[in-house]
Image (tube, rainbow, N blue to C red; front, side, top):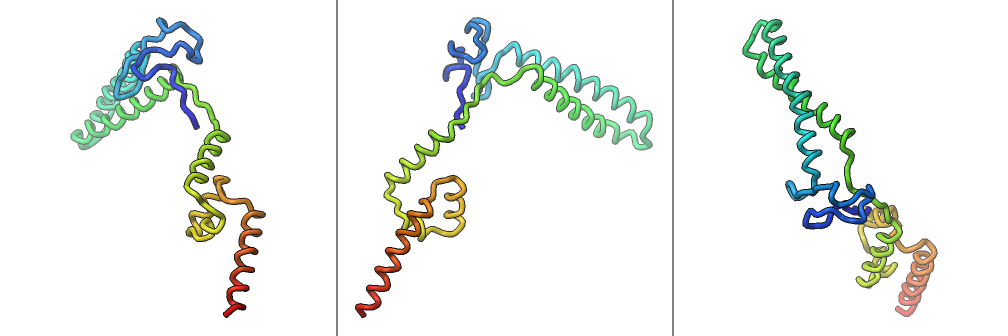
Length: 168
């Protein structure tokens, strides 16, 4: 799977962005090694604080009023506040969808992997020598030799082994 960012490596907007809007409308900056829109980041923080802080303060008042041990109220209220922040993050994911375009290019990835394997000089015989779990994984990825190749090669190797035994 290939990821096509909507920004270039230095954080400047990519002019061929999937959104089609001009670069000036998308002020990206690098934060924690990722390109973000500062306006969306600021709004996301406001949303999370607007949901998490009231959840904490209200739950703290409710827990202090209802719990016999008021010392536990702060801990429970903190958990409710964290849950509020998670809800805020979920709201922000709906408000501000990712700016990246994901493209699934399995055919090109498979072709590249087959080229690398061919360069390594693998043969059906060497495939047969691999552990069973590796063979199964390669089959599931479509990188194993075809059944016709394996049966032809294994028949030839069986015949050569039999002829070697007959000579002895």
